[in-house]
Length: 311
Image 1 (cartoon, rainbow, N blue to C red):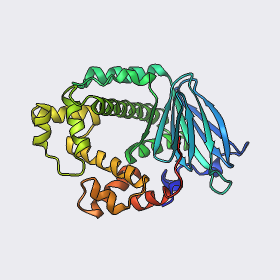
Image 2 (tube, helix red, strand yellow):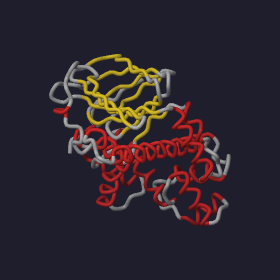
Image 3 (tube, rainbow, N blue to C red):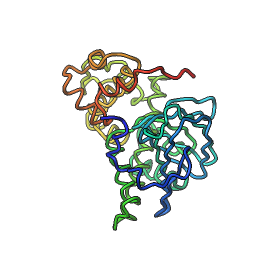
């Protein structure tokens, strides 16, 4: 399956008039949220994008290079999300866009207050012992790989806009809130992982996360995690449910998959990647990888067999 099909073909280009070859924008508006689909049909450099509200960007097909504040420079690929804050500017290169294989991206714009309210609500109803500072997401640059579940959520949101679903307003309201919740949780994970790398003994959760990151290549037991965190089994499960919306063992699987994805991008074979990340069954690894990222390990390795950007 080529990367351009990951979105489930929910963005047929025939429905979008071509008015310009670079960042051709089709705009949909509803329920206080703006959806824009951008198609680019030729190579281009340093195309400016400005954010007036919080701007959630997700790649659909092709490849971009993002240039942002503080000399940030990175590839932007399908199954990745990038969040821009109000007033932020990015400059985008399109190294591979053609008429036959355009680069396509979607953006969802919503208010900073909506993001802040969701972060504050999460902190009230589901505080994490290590306090990742959910509310700080509103001032944070976030560029992450999103899961197949998030991709499916984006598909539902896009369908509600494009197909003019009768329940569109409800779908959009619940869908955008769920998307924001996923962003907030992902920011919390990223923040705690950074803290765990800098100061593993800062608190119980950073100690656990550091232990997991250091031992992805071997079996990890719940008993060991409880001992590392000095937590009961039920307390450990409760903290992971809030932080990652999953059990500790599911979180470990997710981290192994992300590590394997990184190793594949660095040029390791599929066999090397799954053995280096604690998987013992290649079939199970391939199924979980595709569920998580919407593409098989072999397909992902093939996509990344090209020169990488050095910033």
